[in-house]
Length: 324
Image 1 (tube, rainbow, N blue to C red):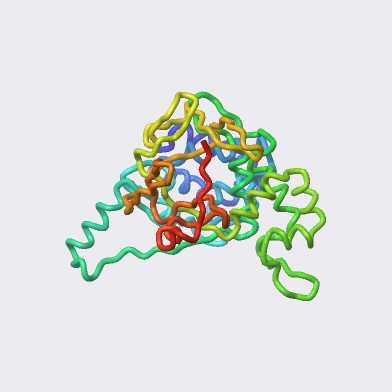
Image 2 (cartoon, one colour):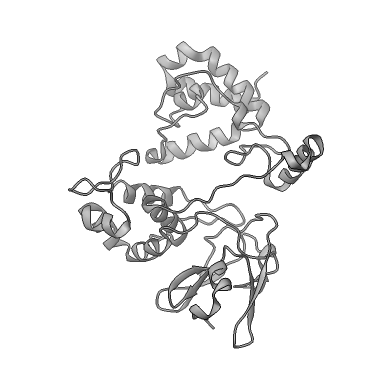
């Protein structure tokens, strides 16, 4: 039996879907029932509300093959197969799971331990990949973090609303060829980096001229590791409430960062979360100060941003910048 939210989504899909809804209403009812069991109806409602408020946020993919999402206008892609929800199912929590892993990260170790006990340690292993930021990804990441037009909305302790920021990301990246087509120069060779994209595409150059900090920082981030945890839980972060451990920071806190002019600025546009257990090192500076880092930590040096692992193996090669 459908709950009130499922009924509301059913009626909304009927209003927006029109003829498509009439043809697939039995399927939509089935999808709603499954989503209700998975406790993700509210996620679908939020997606629909955002697209209604800002049509530019409408998606173009439909990996779960959801007719409901199509009729609600959440995506422009009509499903080409049966609704597939098992990859979206997670155990131990409600809502959508992490990408490619259907178990909450905080309990993932339990699954690994179970497999080792069942099949033996010699038959179980963790496999991972290291992704680096390419041109589009670097620009998108920097626009999200820098929030150059100040469009991110902060409401108390709630998660920041970055829908307008996401729209800006798309506006900038739309100045480049579609993501499914490689960027090529006039001689047919591939565009290698942001600078070359800037020099080749005038519309993109205009966007970078409008947001020079995005251009500057994205060039530094391009080619760097996409995602990793590099700070220990007891790392002290300077905030508007004084020095605060990173594992005690919540959304009510503003953290300090240094802008291009070397001045301190405050922001709530950040996300701190657990990433697991890693080997940490204490890096002692000649001034007597020290910081605790992992090998993946990026350090500002006279040769640019360098992984701590490289510095650790060849400390005489680099000079580290310290901001006091």
